[in-house]
Amino acid sequence: MNYFIDVAFDSLNKFGEELCGDNVELVRTDKEVIVVLADGLGSGVKANILATLTSKIAGTMLQKGATLDETVDTIVHTLPVCNVRKLAYSTFTIVKIDYEGYVHMIEYDNPPFFIHTEERALEIKKQKTPLHDKVISESRFKMNQGDLLTIVSDGVIHAGVGALLNLGWQWENVNDYLAPMAMREKTASNVARGLVETCRNLYMDKPGDDTTVVAIKVREPEIIDLFTGPPEDPEDDAWAVRNFMKGNGKKVVCGGTAAKIVSRELKKELEVDITYKDKNVPPIAYIDGIDLVTEGVLTISKTIEKIEQYMENDFFQVIPSFLKGEDGASLLAKLLIEDCTHLQLWVGKAVNPAHQNPDFPIDLSIKLKVIKELVQWLRKIGKTVTITYI
View 1 (tube, rainbow, N blue to C red):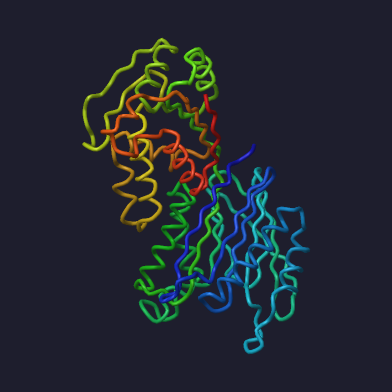
View 2: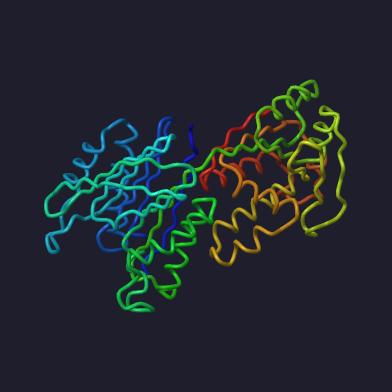
């Protein structure tokens, strides 16, 4: 079967530096997902440039069809070697994983990757190839649904050096930390952000090295169809609802007019809950066969705020309260973050006269602008989004 490859990454800059010396390049093609984590020598601007150069070369070459051998050879012969330390200016890890879960990896002087599976042993053989004074490790294996692959820069392994831990956080400690998280967390984003926040705590908010985590979770595709706004031509109402209801994914309707159209076309009663779970978010409603029915532009705007807050605030401060909200925006945000890999938007282009009221806040004025912002945030957290305008 074809899986959804959920990829997320997060970083800490070395204390006092404006730029991170690590860089991650993520490329999605029709056949596979390519992830490159590069760690530039040192820190700051110089390390950032070298890491970016490494990851861009690898990502671009692989996307254009180059083999891993050709890519590694180009990187090694393009980047200079430090005259003082006799080290390559950038180390890297390259992951290629197709949508059936087959993985091909190259590791060059980065910490070994972590792999966690659900109740099965996975024996991985690494082929070692000498390169200058270093060794390149190459491995191939198969991941199944629920498996977690994590790659890190050495800032993770060194977390706590000179602060809470004398020798830093060893590879075995990180592996033990990730094991329960791999089974508990559904999304790659939660894994990456959780591990980075733990490193921040070990560094006591003063990271001694650039720290990057890339989490790759193999998931079964979870599709959500979201219908908002009436079609531009009322004659298209029946077509819109018929296509919206196709497939087995979860169904979400945002907007009073859209809800009435769905209720009418499905011949199902629309029941409005007048209880305010949050004074800033309009109440939700219910239609048999629809997973979530909310108000339109205002609720979507509040959903965007919650997704933005989820992405930008500290992991341990946001998650517990964020996932427990019962208002429409919290429920929609939770669905889109936790239970969605693919979002199909059905957007009616009819203008709602209420949104043109000058007494309304500016963020209610343009529905399409709000939808565009939602799409941008969802793509930023790794969701596949398609839009059908009606």
